[in-house]
Image 1 (cartoon, rainbow, N blue to C red):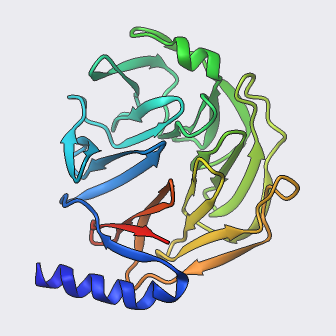
Image 2 (image 1 turned 30 degrees about the vertical axis):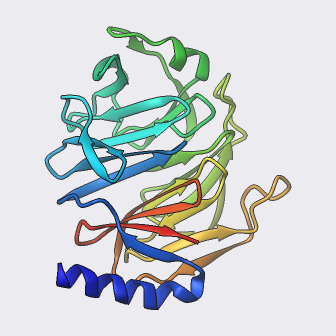
Amino acid sequence: MRAVATFLVLVNFFIGCYGLSCKAGPLQFSVAQLDASQGMVVMTDKDSNVFFLSGSSWSKLGSVPLKHVSVGPAGIWGVNNENKVYKFAGGDFFPVSGQELNQLDAGGEGHVVGVTDGNNIHCLNASYVSSIQPESILDSNTLPGRLIYTSCSSNVCWGVSSSHNIYFASVSSSTCVTSGWTEVEGKAVKVEVGTDGRVFVVNESGKLYERIGISNGAPGGADWKIIEIPTPIEHVSYDLGRLWLVTECEFILECTH
């Protein structure tokens, strides 16, 4: 615990000038990834267990092992180590057969966007997502482009390619029609879009950046602003003014302005 306290002192020292205050997130060992949206926070650990944040502690979510989980207006979705897709309903995750995905995001306006092991991009429109039931067949639309990771807000998705290039595109929640991907400068391995449209990326070195200058007239923003954290970051999520970070040592930080 003394090491944790010392680490947090260093964190607050380094990022205080950025207007952030960080504290240790609810204790959980071996965190793999997390996602936050609409006041909910979900996470997976290195053993593929899924949890949700209940007050100040983690509670087990369902009985299905998953490597990646996402929460948003589309509900709670996940994929397992065999890239099978699952949706949470009725107290547990049920499989949705058909298209396999390596990673997906439920943060869109009721639609879900995901990528395959082959870097193909698929979109499930909002009406299909809301009507899907156990034993359903995953009926997705294939989007142009190739990505290894994606994250969406109401009508804009961001993604990174296998070359770590960064892209954004408008994606219709009702039809999955896209404007096509536009590249912005910079390199990243992970991207996260908050429900309010704020965009954060993590690069190969574990550096954390926020995209600034985003507006209706400039959906791709203007520049990247580094957020100095004194340890490499593995994963980031943002919701309701809270920045959730998973560090290289599998430790959760909860940061607020």
